[in-house]
Image 1 (tube, rainbow, N blue to C red):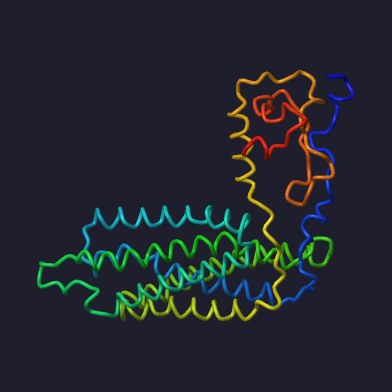
Image 2: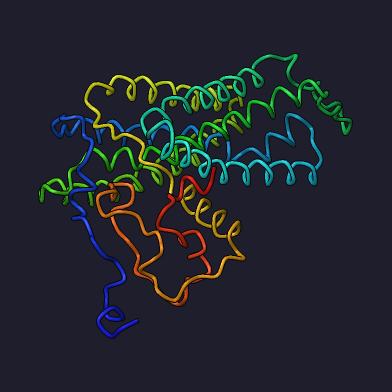
Length: 316
C-alpha cells in the first residue's frame, strides 16, 4: 500500500450527522408536549416498576411463604431477566417495529403483568393460607405459577419500554436546529431525573404502604401509575415524531462474522482495491460511513474477496 493510501482517513465518505439524526420525522414540527409526555411516562413507569422490584423479596417471604434461599434465587433470576430483555427490545425497535410501536406493544405485557400481580394480592385463592404460629403453609404450584407468570410479563414489558422510550424522546428533537439540539441535551438530564424521582417516591411511599397498610394497595398504586402513563402516552400519538426502523447494528455485526467464518480458508489478496467494498451510492442513514482497510481487521476481509458478488448473496 503506497504512502498516500496509508494516510487515508479511517472513516471515508462521511455524511453529516445532521443528515442522519434529522431524517424521517414524518414532516411533523417540534411539539414540546411530546417529550413532556415521555418524561411523565418515565416518571410514572419508574414508580410502577420500583413498586414491584424494591419489595419483592419481602412479599415472597411474608405472603407466599417462600424460604430465604428460594426468595433470593427467584428475585435474582427475575432481576437478571429484566436487565436482559432490553437487548431484545432494542433489537426489535431497531430492526422491525420502530421505537413507538415497541413501547406500545410492550405496555400490553407490562400492564397485564402488573394487573395480575395486583389481583394475586387481592384474591385469597391466589395466596397461601395465613401463618398459624410458626407454621406457614407454602404457596401452591398454581399460586406460584400465576404470580411468577405475572412477574415475567412485567419483565418483558419493561424491557421494551426501557430500550425504546429514551430514544423515542430523543427523536422528537432535530439536531440540525441549534435550539432543539440544546433542548435535547436537557431532555436526557430530565429523563434520568424522572427515573430517580420515581424510584425515590416508590421506595419511600409505596413500599411503606405495602408493609404497613396493604400489599394490594401498594401494587394497586403501581398499576394505576402505569394506566395513567399508558393513557397519556397513547394520547400523544398524533404529535410524536416517529422514525422508521433502520436496522440493528447487532444484526450487521453478526452478518460480518458469519460471512467471514464461511470464507475463513479463502486467501485475502494484498491489494485491497479488488475487494468488494460496496458502492458509495449505497451508503445510507443506517451505514453512512466506510472503514478504511487496516492490517488489524484482515480476518474479516474474507467476506469481501470478490467484487462481483454482494454480501447478501454470500449469506444466502
